[in-house]
Image (cartoon, rainbow, N blue to C red):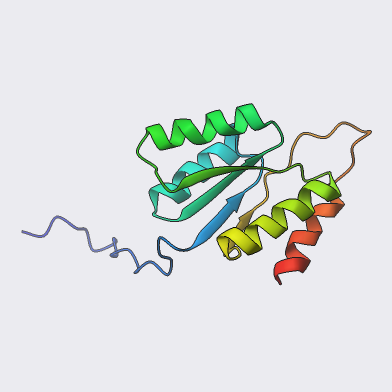
Length: 126
């Protein structure tokens, strides 16, 4: 007997592999952290980023402790052009680029406006 209802369809074949690189910014907590976990669960190579190195390392370690070995951390402050440039260079030279970018921007006070330097990542890899 088939347990599937007629409304259910089989999932499509994945278009990604374990070499597909997903970068998730602001992923040390909240939605960004959960998105990083979900992408890793699906088998993608995930780069979790955060401004705070200790929190970012801890967040990545927590995901690896759950068996998500494809998660690594790299510090990134999307409001700092030097940080964006260093991250982009590392991503290009050490990782080989990115396939998916999930921008989970930080909470910005009125004195810290939208992260315009982050557009450099798009321009750099587009």
